[in-house]
Length: 157
Length: 157
Image 1 (cartoon, rainbow over the protein chains, first blue to last red):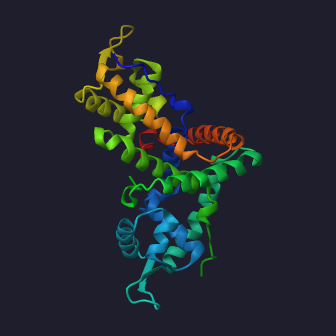
Image 2: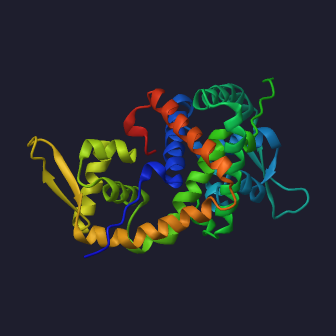
Image 3: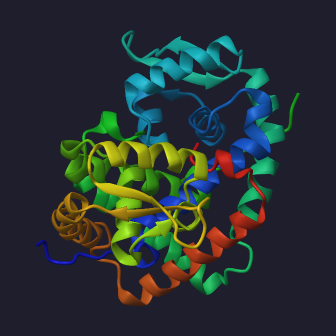
């Protein structure tokens, strides 16, 4: 008979993080995105463009943790929705640069305040003295996971 | 013209948490689950059964953050794989009780040490003084999100 193996999910960091992650996605989709036909990944692309201006596809992939081929298809959808523009880079004909279209900027003007309010509801009651270690820990985990060399194309699974 | 709206993803908690959550899922699927034909949700069900024994479907749904109807289909798949058993509760004919089958216990004996090692790699370099606030913050966020009344069926989106 196998040795009795136990794992207490309630104390297991990957579960504690992932259940919050799933609820964050579901919550923000319900709160803000669904009525605009946007997925969480599409929203993330728009938000990344809001703070950094036009971006090469490769840089945008890093900023949003979305692999380049998935991102490329998503940009096509955002283009059809009139939310972004896609141009060739001046520096290199082979590089695609994605920017917010006017309609995308207008939409973000509505969504970003909702996003900030949502974040406020999510972290309500957590003292600042816990938020700083939380952010440090999340960044370290992100770095650790990147170092584990998971194939990039599986990152959105 | 719309007011310029910006959101810095790198400082936005929902993004910082969710990109770690996605990478955790992808990492553990690649590391341990794919070769056994298991999804992260199926693994979570097995892990919950490992520490708590046979469970009513409704309790298992709460423990794993998976809604009852999704869970019910998943249990059917786990049953076909021979990893769990499904019986009627003695207390109530209408209640289903899910338990680990012998084959499921054996598989967990292999997977749980991999899960613990994976967790160790993920939190490597984070001091204990940051892990305690991290856990507190994650639990608080989970509670806050539950209070936002997102429809349960969307939780796995």
